[in-house]
Length: 429
Ligand SMILES: [Zn+2]
Image (cartoon, rainbow, N blue to C red; front, side):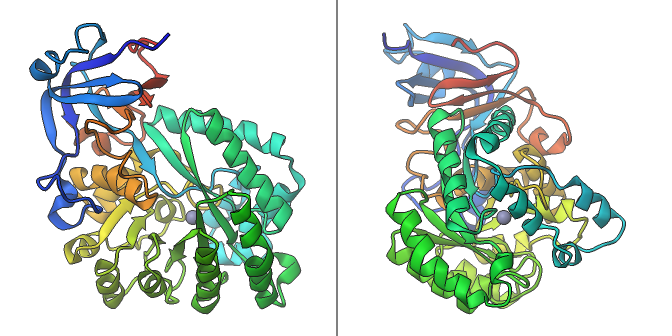
């Protein structure tokens, strides 16, 4: 039996993200980044998993489907699009809390990596784990993502670094995406670091990626995107160019980790290749900012990693926005540098540490995140025809989402119009 339509009415503030130029279809840049399309006492009418109508409650209530809809009174809630978190490393076997303690004691992230810790310690234990051992923990984290308002999550491989283990990760991602509750988007990150067995001949590993791993992953349709960690201690821009060019030939669009630990030229390469996104960017130069602003590449900022590493140099969000770059925000959820599922916490960091306005941070974490995953025609804003992915916070004002930090105030989350989290038991199932 088809489900009844659902009417979420009387939202205290409904953030539709409708911009002043609704015909514009690209990611939000400059002043448009802060356009929330806020409606007070707003309503969303949902049918068949999609938004049927949206606007002021008194208008939406007159819609022909509204009369037989199940109704939710959202008087005490701020309602916005579910977060689209466009950068995570969801599948890992265990935390690295021991290294966290070493870092606090003064050992650097790169020193830990040189001693065989860091990414490679996760690789060692992941290679030993089976898919059925990896899935339950990821499933628990996905429930937490949903509880913090996230409805779509990008997931990278990259802790396997051999064909069998990388495929194992990507198959877990595929399985969890089919299961729900959160929609997953897979990225192949075989070029995370050079695996120990290729330590002395990194170019042979690049060759393996290009000749064997990328074509196999692409032919099995296991990933939409290909990412490279282009940084000191990982891959050079020349290697990244080879890898991403061959990925593109195989049908996987490029993205890049760039300029996090050192400025090596990754941002410039991303702009040149028209990569879908360039992520991190803490150490970019003025020239990089110009290049990125003039490119279609989305600048995905990951302040959680800066915070967790105890560093103080955040990506220059203001300069990027003012230059006209398209900025997105993501958690970078991973066991080494950013163990958080909380987009609201990322918004707090974006506002207080990078001086983004609360409105800019919200658009960067929803609509621009959807652009960074090539899903903006379906996700990231609340418009008639789009998928009904919503998050609701028990607050009086949207600015309180970043303002209250360290506590989760998300109360319910809908994916395709269905409840995936409901702390108040308010939404009909
Ligand atoms: Zn990352």
